[in-house]
Length: 405
Image 1: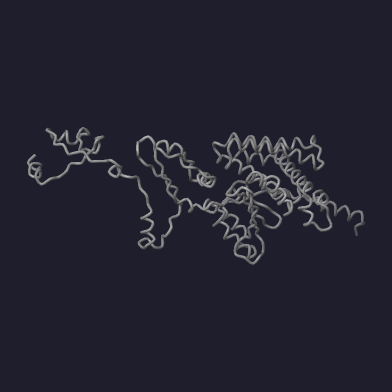
Image 2 (image 1 turned 180 degrees about the horizontal axis):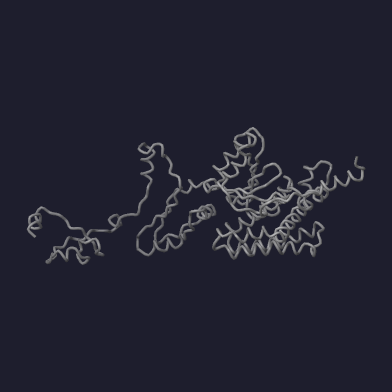
């Protein structure tokens, strides 16, 4: 039999035990079917829900489940969104905002001299993002930073301090969700300690202080045992509409990062099946924020509508039509019905020179010399390469003479 002291020691060792988890702190992007295969032998409810995931989220990123997975997943997604959806001025704005949040830390009673190293690590990484905006697909520097245990721990500590400070300074918004605890007590037990799993209240506060002010929304897909065929999605909407959305996957006790298909982003691409018509006297078309987001989708390029309008003005009276087409074509089920006719009736094409106002075809000129070499050269007005191209006009009178030649 063990003595009470020995049993207490065994209990302490059990409480302090941390299993050695394999793999990096932040993994690479993987096909979501990998996640489906992991749950193939699990509960049938989980199997059905994971099988539906790839239709909306084709890729996901594994986050190490060391107790910091929720904080790390959201912090990385925030930085990744800055890389993919920002300009140099936006990065500078975020740097300034992060530094200004030192006032929030101080107002919650945190000594700034103890926080400055954590703040500097986050600000330096955000500043480094500005050096990679020209090639946002190269996110290796971000992954490396979050896989560096020193940098990752500093950034997580910073966002935890911001979260607890936000909750303490907005206590009335959060105390109603706590039973028998003050906000300060909750933060000291669930927010500030390292390697403590993120709960919904901490997630909500971190989004309020860090993510929403940057113009980003958040969607958390909950993989639970609820009686649905797909994951339950809870959305935290930013004040700025149609901005980027960070996607997280929560399964009991763990967070990973999800990546949506472009057509499932918060922009309805079919709304942009339209024609923008300009002429040399009209101002360049306006690029709305929603159109800007459409152009930055994978597989699209950011077109300069200004330069297109300038090019349209180079030819007097010429009109240019710029088309933004949805990648999916409507009415495919009825290609020969009324829907197809309606689609054809709304199609606009570049106007022909013969439709331009004031155009009159020049009179046909009978050239004195019609050798085969001349007729097949661009000097012949009837040749398509001639600048003043004018097709030959057939008349019954010339039928015999043309055959005789």
